[in-house]
Length: 460
Image (cartoon, rainbow, N blue to C red):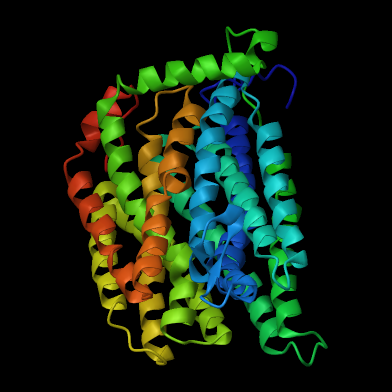
């Protein structure tokens, strides 16, 4: 930072003009790269490889009835992955609000972002050692990596109101998602080459999967260096540095945040709608490969190709829906995507087993709405956050994004546990999108932006 420039909580600098605009664009470009870094975990690990592989490992440890017994509790092997995802969310819920409060109180998001990112990257790299019947190791590493990514996303998302003007946020947020899906697609192509040709590379199928898992952690760690170099911490005015860094102060600030959010009921109304429909989105992301492999009988190569198709189309979808939002507003565009989600997941129930072409069709439909619905939800929420409380409010948002998305995987796992059918599990997700649509329709977003004390964009 140049001499005489003071970072503030609103993201502006004392030095204005072209230097300020150039600095903002530099931060935006660096910000995109955290999506580029961590999205490989979401794609290669959570969506493609870990679900089917951990299920296979758990089945190797199961008894004659197909159950494993962690802590003496009988669990069907096919439910281990879904339960681990759900438990990781509970861990994240306990950590995210504190991290958000400390980040806003100290203004030092970067050290916390680095700690969360490299904890998740290390846990993901450690998945190389997941083999044999080590399902407990796999579940533990999944819990750590997933919780760490959720915490890091609190801090990452909290930068958006600071690095982008109100009229820029739909575009900037959509580009961030596009960067993420681009990296996910690129690495997935490399994964596909290794997995499908593992014999020519002289490795077993299991080893190829473990290399794909571990490489996602290495990618995550390497490209996190870019945002850590480009993003800037904002100095917090009128707060003592010593008091700001205390954990107790962070908890006190969290309590104050919860009380403060009660003064913004329209922001909470949006969060409730987002909590519901995003629970469905996150469950589709984490359970799609398990559904394809276990219920539809599709091989791993088909699943990788389908997820690759999702990544490619999600880039176009995120950018395209960003443009639609500029014309029709973010709220209307999100509502349109939720209607498409409802129809798509409902159709997924009827997919015939052993027919890859229909799974590809489902993947195409998901890809077109996936990135845009997430990107526009993030940018819309950024308008509803009171200035100076970005990390705290985004910690609650992240609970809705990942932190409160425990119900979908839990319902999915329970449905399989009780019925032995993944079709019965997938159809339950329709309710999340339909109810989320109904709740979002009722939110007056312009009034919510004004109530948060922010300028209202021309279209929202």
